[in-house]
Image (cartoon, rainbow over all chains, first blue to last red; front, top):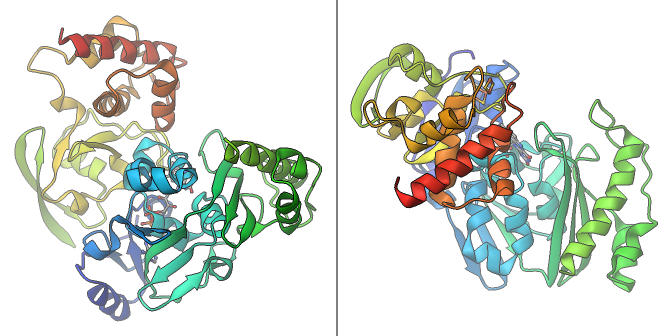
Length: 265
Length: 158
Ligand SMILES: Cc1cc2nc3c(=O)[nH]c(=O)nc-3n(C[C@H](O)[C@H](O)[C@H](O)COP(=O)(O)OP(=O)(O)OC[C@H]3O[C@@H](n4cnc5c(N)ncnc54)[C@H](O)[C@@H]3O)c2cc1C
Ligand code: FES
Ligand code: FES
């Protein structure tokens, strides 16, 4: 790991000021993506601006029909939160499937969605539940937030502060994990929300995407059979040593079916 | 830049100098000479480096030393009571829960965090909890057996 300067601001304003004054700065939350990349010298920031001392980024609250999770909330805390378990058990379930126990003790929601790994789990919940990403300057709708491979709508110095998840009628997440890393080879989040049925897929493409054909079929009949024969085109899907694109397409159908089954309890 | 950090390690106030980029595991091993904590990978996946920070298990290869400033760190060296092994260590010994021993400190620190949250884990829960701890030797069976045995012993306080 190359040398850098470390900063620990206590307010968002200070964090942004430090960001503006540095050569090649990066924010740091749980460090479970950034530090491994720095060890491999894939990332070489001049300054690390740690956000963990900023109290306003922490915690989980219920606001009307929404569960608002602070960007600095760790995966393990989401998995065990009584509020999340009561309102959106599928979200707690998803958080509890991320990586391993120690990863969940450090990794955060904000870090995960700022990084936007194509195989990360949270993007499926954000898009599946039609959540709103809150930042230090605006609110971004789920469908506008993830733009491409490791790309989001965030500006360079923008800080994710929280995510507001609307409570669904029912929802579930199923993933086929990579047996070594636990990242999703394919993960499917199915939700019946106030605005209709949503099916969001992570791991299969460059970035999370919805399957409108499955959404339409589930609107007519919310049952596993409804999606069992829907196979998505595999042309643009990821193909790597872990799984070929046609296999991923197949897994989307299987995981969607299982997610519907799980959502029905 | 050289910085000075202070933290409580295994109940003692310790301080030392390192760089901002120094990983906690490097500080523990090379500055404090607590070499029981191991490094088995470059990718934060193996768990050989697991220690407790403020009572929670973390991978010390994926945390900066400056982030442990003022915190309470426990390593494998802080687990036994003098010459008396901790029931978890004793259980690994009795159940052949290690072969080369490389993964063992991390396994034990991780297992202790499990028992804290779940004093009576099922075999499945133990296996799931060990997702982040890799062992190249044992095939895990005896590790799981050791942790189960330790849970029994710790429950009866024996
Ligand atoms: C062994 C291992 C297994 C894993 N398995 C999984 C898995 O199964 N599923 C999964 O989804 N993830 C997995 N992860 C990734 C893990 O969830 C990370 O914690 C997460 O992706 C990044 O969160 P972080 O808080 O650690 O972010 P950091 O590493 O601190 O930061 C990541 C990026 O986000 C930026 N950033 C951080 N916080 C903010 C913010 N509030 N606003 C704007 N930008 C910010 C940083 O500048 C950096 O570019 C795994 C990681 C490891 C090491
Ligand atoms: S050395 Fe820390 S996880 Fe491998
Ligand atoms: S005993 Fe050798 S790696 Fe586990």
